[in-house]
Image (cartoon, rainbow, N blue to C red; front, side, top):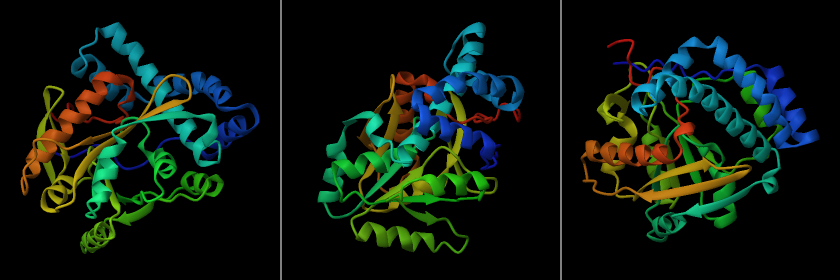
Length: 295
């Protein structure tokens, strides 16, 4: 089975520039105000993503039809808020937000063992701002993000241009598998390796398991690597709460077996499910995740 996600983000450069102007001149909440109308546009004119999120609410979260319909709009709105927050924090407005940590000692313990650590996150919440939080807790947190990086757009280049320099290093997945050596080098330097475990591309290897009561496919790579290396594995999420408040969670992978990637996947999906039961609006995979069109 193949993921329908094509690795490309939506939006226009002009739209991003308008939001950045609002954020800098009038504050983050003014940008939220404009987002009310932008979210409605996506709600009306992106039927594929609407169908995917409606299915999530109706079938996987078990909401009634009208409630699921309304939740789709809310999902667009909260997703837009996380994008605005990421731009604001990255461009130097970090002090406008408050935050708290839950399980940060798990990460400190991983680094204390001098074996590095493997972080696995998901497209829930706002993990892309994790480095801004971790750097304030401990300057020794060096994160390496493993990425395919399929797109290079004017939007991405614009965001990088207005953002402060990130401490995150990137390890790009390559056909010759040389990225595996980069991962090993980073771990030997007692650094953190981060994967997202909920998206894959056409042609890549997958593992399948039950997720929210329905079979779904996940990328095999993060779970194969996690099961073969001796580094501790931690599931990490940065979840948006009311106002301008964020909550970072770190949870050690429990009940896993060495060289058994399926056990790591099972622990991961259980962890993501528990997070989404608490923050159900922050599921940001706007494509046919459970592949209902093929079924």
